[in-house]
Image (cartoon, rainbow, N blue to C red):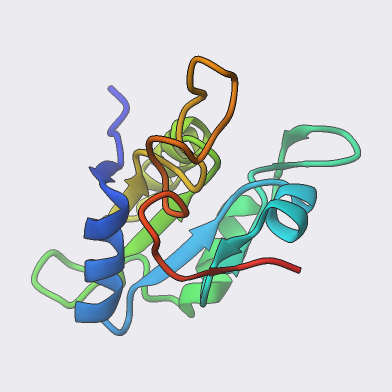
Length: 141
């Protein structure tokens, strides 16, 4: 049975980052989304699926391990580095988080609303949920 990453609201994720200096926020969206739509301040960008092939990044788990410098696998009684994943609306981060848990990571979370939230009735994002909607720090290239 697959484990699932623990869901966090954008505010809970931001709070965890403030309370746990070893925590890392990883934006897993495509490079185009990261650069042109914007991204949370201070996050690390590791695409789960990216152009030009739009397939799951075979190096994703390895790249996350490199960011954590070995702090991802640890005994339950040690201080594990929390990994918080964010995507557009919380769907890709769920899949990517499950992959990390299956590879032995123990502290995996995902921002359930994502960066932009779900589509509204007008087919717009960032109008009712997401990191950006809640006014949390973000930047755009």
